[in-house]
Amino acid sequence: MDFIKITEQPSRYDHLETMSIEEVLVNINTEDQAVPLAVKQAIPQIEAAVATIVEQLNKGGRLFYIGAGTSGRLGILDASECPPTYGVSPDLVIGLIAGGDHAIRHAVENAEDDPNQGWLDLEAYQINANDFVIGIAASGTTPYVIKALESCQVHSIPTACITCNPHSPLSQVALFPIEVIVGPEFVTASSRMKAGTAQKLVLNMISTTTMIQLGRVKGNRMVDMKMTNAKLIQRGIAMLQAELKVSKEEASQLLDQYQSVREALNHYKL
Image (tube, rainbow, N blue to C red):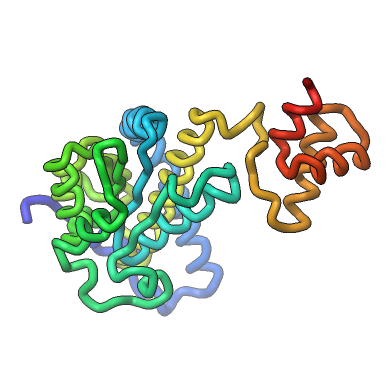
């Protein structure tokens, strides 16, 4: 391998077992403070990827996240939050993980080492050139993800990757490589820590910016959110009160009638 896996370099700390609880927490927090600064350095790459994602979704395409282990779980988390937050179809943003849904909760032995399964998992969704695929792998060396992106290239499907090592094999096969270099982990090679945090921040930025560009936010409010519990219903009522300057009772009646903050706003102003 002709590159250095920074994510697997020795921790800057040693003898962790001799540290007090406070020392461990303070040192983890100290390391975590480097993450948003590393993400900031990658904003130009994130911007380029999002611009194409928006183009693809406006053409009727979908956004796929594909990864293994922690990386796969983070993609599934971000994808699963888009429908309730922005009212989009669950088929718009899709998360895939090596080993299938069972791997969300349980480690599936050798699943990430299968170089062919990633593309097969994408094919199960009739992946096409209108879609966009983001490969997520902290190391940038996961065969399941790399081969999936290589196959996307062959089929003219635009891709990005989120990795925490520079010049990784995954970056070489992504149209828009996003490299967030967070350095060695507090616990050596435990990439669910800083690398996982970095991936989560980047995914937040990608999905949020995309949804804003697709018109799923009004002002600064989630007007298309699905009100699936009492807390969200109250949030919707508060949005209508703030936007329309009406009483809580009237806002509640509007929401009950239209079942959507956006629809209530549109009809009230007619």
